[in-house]
Image (cartoon, rainbow over all chains, first blue to last red; front, side):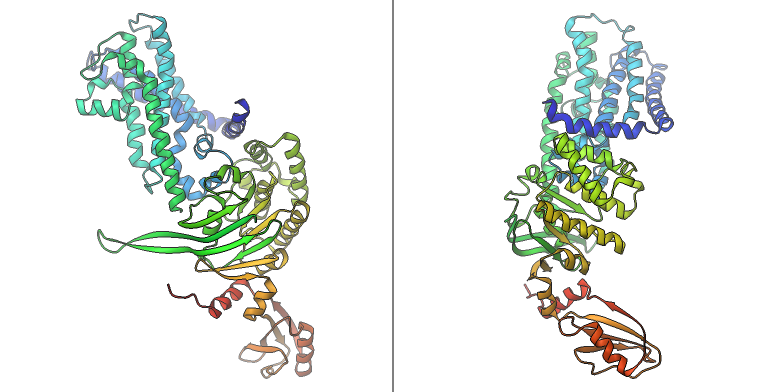
Length: 267
Length: 324
């Protein structure tokens, strides 16, 4: 197994090396990414300067949703955020080069880049999580502690799958990056607020079509032992890994169809 | 047979807007019923005009593109279904597209490729040493690819394609844009690899010298169909391609007509520069020159080889494609 992963480790190592070569510019990139996280959190803060509760959660609860969602998104963006650049890969012939190597194309594409600067945003999310966790009234059980660790990983997997789907769609759309960004970045935005603030159709869309609510809101309900809004019972919070598995199935099938379309249609 | 192609076809649908909402569909037959076999160890030049279907064929041979109909077997494998197994056995170089990592030096690219192909450390380091030596890469092995000159980069690309010792090397216009010396070195290297490792070569090119120096067989493709399959002298004989001798004369002279085995191509108005075409099978440049010397004083001369576009154009003219 370890041997099977060697090519990817070497590929990633070469990417990491090329990014940290220029120390100062890398530091600025990380700082820039961190500021994005801080500015977004400021938005939550400003909302709570005017209201006491949002979608049934108090400030600490909403901040926890925000931190979990941001952590998950930053991890996914770090690992596979470059997938929506697929049109560039198609234009420059990089995808043809991938097809000429004895590895699966999606695995090569995923490991063809890693955006370490997004560590900045992940660090901000982690810091906020560290601050707001003690402010919440959580009855810590073994299962809830496990969920605290599983939720960001499942959430990252959900966002990663959304990026793969966004990439797959680019095989058909010539310049569709804007369209698919609505689902990836839009999904991230939706995930960082309690799903209960949305009207029912939006709530259903961002739970069962784009499973953004599974990233942070539903696990937060479990952690705080709060009932869910209409249509979203609390136990769904335990199902984040299932939601991730489901969306990954869609992502892999979509990717295969996209690649088949590409080799069928040519360029 | 290392490559076997039977009745291969590939169509593309091209949509062009014809009105505000309407689009017309045109079906382009990029490859239109190709059949050929290539024996292991041979060296084949695949030539044709731009848009004749060369790159489309190569993409189908390597599994990048699915044929519309017909069969392709490369190294006995179905190129699309057996893509990953095939990738271990062939090397492909696109002269105009890089397969290297632009921000990595060659040394690291090769290390990465060796990992991708899961080559045992001993095997690939010996192979790399051989390639570095034969292609003279040592002086820029640690320079990022983006800083290499075109000639250096192509050499780097070819070494990358050969690192896993493929039995078949496919080169799509490998010498395009290279200077004369670089071209020549590349040809010497490729011929050497063929002798040393029995590597089968398939190359597309616009350069007659590439074909002359490297290929023992040529396939000419025209409008997606095979227009010629045979040796280069056979092709030249068939289309009567000629060398052109350009003569700069010391004094204005009457047109040099009637010199044996030559054809006067053109005379510049004052008769100071004249061009004669001849076939190297019938006469030699020296014989022509001797005969011209009897009539006038030659100051300078150049000889142009028939270029491939010209040969192909003549072939196309000789056998116009049947209307479909």
